[in-house]
Length: 115
Image (tube, rainbow, N blue to C red; front, side):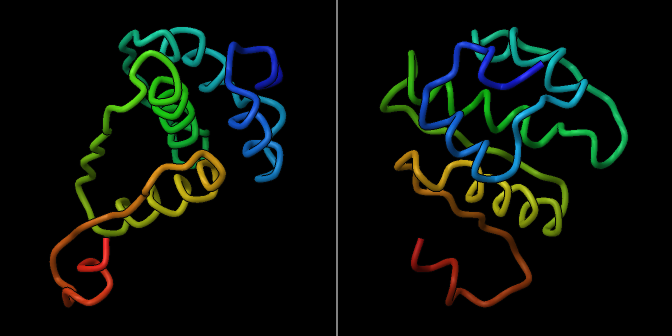
């Protein structure tokens, strides 16, 4: 299934295509129809199966739609995962007008202070 088959904003589709995403991975296909409508899902799958993109696309869709003007906070258990999510969010959301940043301990204030 293609991302363009979902009820997603054209800019989200464009960002996905620019990032090399056109076909959904199974986890994305199974969850997006529910999550872009604000429904909760629980997913457990191996690394590299598309979970991060699935929840980011859902968040972006909601923040550009019915939750416009709201904010989103993603909490990750490790610094490495926080950085990975931030990079993916920047890749997929670069043209959507969101401020995307991560904050975590163990590093100086420099980079984080400017966000």
